Amino acid sequence: MDSRTVGILGGGQLGRMLVEAAHRLNIKTVILDAPNSPAKQINGLHAHVDGSFADADSIRKLAEECDILTIEIEHVDTTILEMLEASGKVQPSWKTIRVIQDKFGQKEHLTSHSVATAPSIAILSNTVATLEEVGQKLGYPFMLKSRTLAYDGRGNYVVKDTSSIPGAIEALTSGSLYAEKWVPFVKELAVMVVRKKDGTCISYPTVETIHENNICKLVYAPARTPQGVQETARRLAEKAVGSLWGAGVFGVEMFLLENGELLINEMAPRPHNSGHYTIEACSTSQYEAHIRAITGLPLFPHNTSMSTPSTNAVMLNLLGPLYLGVAKKALGVKGVTVHLYGKGEAKKARKMGHLTVIAGSMAEAEYQIQPLIDLVDGREE
Ligand code: ATP
Ligand code: MG
Ligand code: MG
Image (cartoon, rainbow, N blue to C red; front, side, top):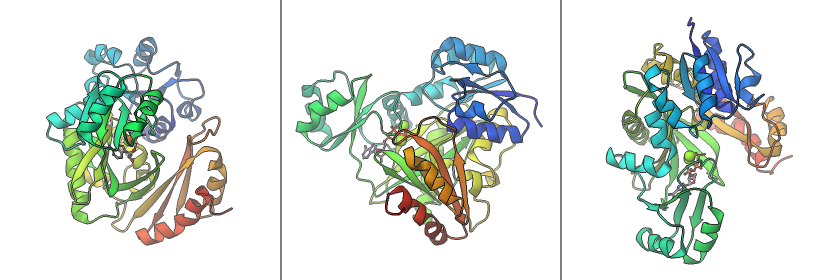
């Protein structure tokens, strides 16, 4: 269908699922990451680049190999991407990636575009006195967060009261920090937004995410909230992504408050864990939507809807050493699709795979997945 080659910075599970989607459209992919990374394992077509997506020379090398350069992780070197801007290859824009990779900068960006987000304060010096001042302004508990290189809650620390300040400083030693007001949310929601090359946005249904120990555990699609909340969340997510630059899919994480108010937690300029369910549940997956958006292939609102009006999905992440046992059991459960990522050692809390159950109602999907959740929780052998 298409003779272009897409270069991807990062070869983890998101890259691997991008490769699957691209190849179905005859679009070739080249990956920059460590040898044998998950995305390279299933993609023997081209010379990949072995190296780091944070290294300028390696990125330049990858750029020579492809027509479009994109990311599956935001922790990349944006200086070189800015230099490559004139080539017209980089999607989404380096500006978007740079704004998002600094979580405090992202908050300032959202606020300046009148998008609601939790009040935040940049920390200029990591001292007890500074954090006590912040505690007075934001109240307790508050969240202390690393501005950069954060994922799966690594880089977050809950400051419960003044006595936990020294521990917080000790825990977060690398890089700049910022503090965020505690949000007493009733649910966490997320929306995958597709930004097309012309800047217009379409969005997938609003989903509900459940985190455990700061890591996404479950995704319910659509969210178990009233229709009005789902629509408001989609409009907010589209507004937020509309304020950025370039094409691609974006994951937008949100907090739903008791009074119905929505605050944006953070955005990701790439496919997102909360959008895995789209592979089985939607007409076009978030991965294919990303490939279509960055290559300028057709994309319509019907692409991002659930496959049928009665399609419901629940996604469960498979973390750490238990993953294989759960995956094997899941193969016997009706409506389940298993995805394993080909990662090395199954360290505790490492994302090794996921599974998605599809059913004709949310009650049925919840019923089918419960034994697998029990297994993950250690309630069942
Ligand atoms: P990701 O893997 O999504 O990139 P991350 O490391 O960037 O994660 P955050 O999204 O900032 O981390 O936070 C992880 C989780 O911590 C959130 O999904 C939410 O459950 C909780 N959390 C974050 N900020 C707050 C807050 N201000 N108030 C209450 N809970 C919060
Ligand atoms: Mg994050
Ligand atoms: Mg997050």
